[in-house]
Image 1 (spheres, helix red, strand yellow):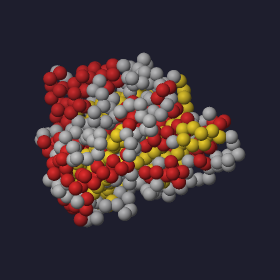
Image 2 (spheres, one colour):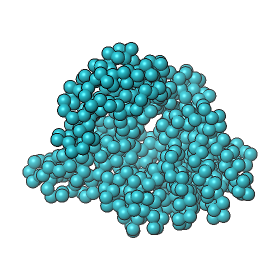
Image 3 (spheres, one colour):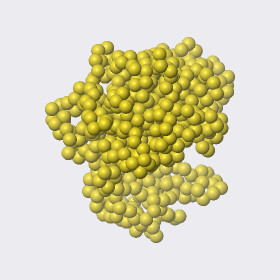
Image 4 (cartoon, helix red, strand yellow):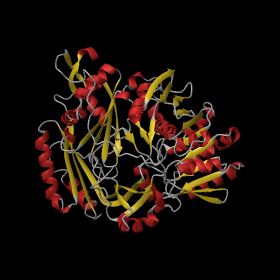
Length: 589
């Protein structure tokens, strides 16, 4: 049986700190360096970069980081696996080869592709092989698609490593695949080693967002030492798929059951976490603090994956523009009404002329304000339309024209007149795995790796609903309560899932979980967060993690790139919930 393999992360998104790779390579012993550069939005960003700069369809920051650490990785035998290839894995591999040449190095560089479905999109759609990801979904206008990439699994990475690759670059693979691949290669797992694969997927899910596993975006951040410069995490994956999550010594942050639980809840749905290689049962995970900054993850049960791959499609949705006007002092609502009336009188278009409008009065003002900022609310208007001219200067100029003929204290919060900006619409889809093989390019040879696996025994996720709460979980009203923010008892982590938002909440004791499970129903969530009241909300209990995960459907409209919310990625949704004041059992405080 092979020793555990230590897989480190150095990036959680396209824009993470450039020193991450060097910190992980030089800060302590590791076997594999990984990084996640891709998100649903990133693929759209890369498509825009490539349109302006041919050959720019990959994450250039990864190449910069590799220039810093390639020599050390080669000397120490550290493998590198990254999805930074984006829309152009071959181009990324070529750029790495150029770096190696300049440094006088000769690592074996492989790349994995096959995820890009754009050349086949019309054929797949017309034949019915491409379907909306959820029933009732919409594939949109295929001709407007800018990107269409299937989420591949780990077996192309495994093949590349088996063929001697030192550096493996992929296109769109799942975030966890860059961890699961090296673990499966090192331990010699077979495709049906469901539990081991599921354990590695869970480990990969924990570390893929870099410092979010070590105290970043953590509700109880005031308890974390070194928050100003958090270290990045690693996962030491054992032969049975269990893992220890840790970080290099003498780096900021912490690895605790709290930080790991928080990240486990990030961007998930129900208890079954679907992937191209395995379905990981999040309701079977066990966590144990086994040392300072060391948390063991064990017990994860794996099941066969679905027969389809998720496809991330982005299309050009049109153009958008936003104006924001300060509303200061008294008569906020009346000022908002007057500012809107003046704007629409000046605008050459009527509200009905635009494809979509979002108009909001955002009350950030306070009574008896002791600062100018505390006296200020805002009226925020966003318009969308296919016609770029309609939402461009003709729209934004109308606000400027009213500056001296509008409400008292008028000033703009969105700058001067601005041109329209394009926005993308995210269209999740699915395609049969057997139609999307992976292609591994290494040493001048191309090898095809099938994405499909015998998934007999695959089960759909349970319908949203709750198992009976644990005894004592119901809010009986018999316990003494005090009014406190919900965050005095629970932590939260939230984020985007296409047009939906995920909001995970977790308790830090069995007693707090029992109360939370009875108190925080989907209906209660909607009453506490009124913006969700008219939306469908699913609730999933995860008693083993003392957690509940909510999925709020359509909160982000057509996805992050199109959302008109100030927080278009729902990153702060959980902290808003924690700020709501409720009656909390005094014993829990």
